[in-house]
Amino acid sequence: MENNKLSRKLGILITRLRREQGFTQEAFAEVCDLHRAYQGVVERGEKNINIETAQKIGKALGLTLGQLFTLLDAEPEPPEPLPKQPYRRKKKKRTSASKKAGAKKKKKKSKAASPSTRKTASSKKESEPENPPDETSA
Image (cartoon, rainbow, N blue to C red; front, side, top):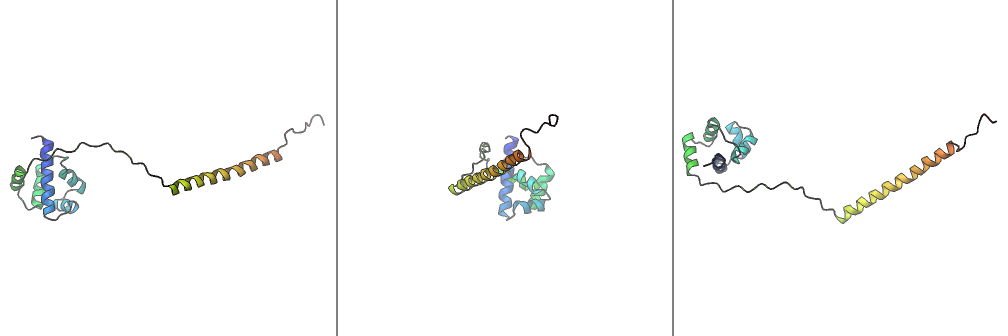
């Protein structure tokens, strides 16, 4: 049996026994003195555990290491895992109300920008004459 299948089989067994005893994953990890994220990795069979960790888990379940491995040996083969699907970001559906709100904001921005641009352009024309008088000829 491959290591990853054995790890998955052990993880399935631990999960089943933990749930039968009414533990949440987080509470069980605390009893085993393991990090809750590591407990999840073990239960999914993503990591091989060492003998000390197996002993901690067995003790928390009220089993000796021998009993845990006997149950593991009797456990049926795990099903093949599903292939991982690539993550696809879902597009947000825009409702007609949000489309109208977006259109109104665009109109307000364009109206607000137009008058202020005209004022600054006209104020520049008034403050600066186009042809300054020539001081040398006067």
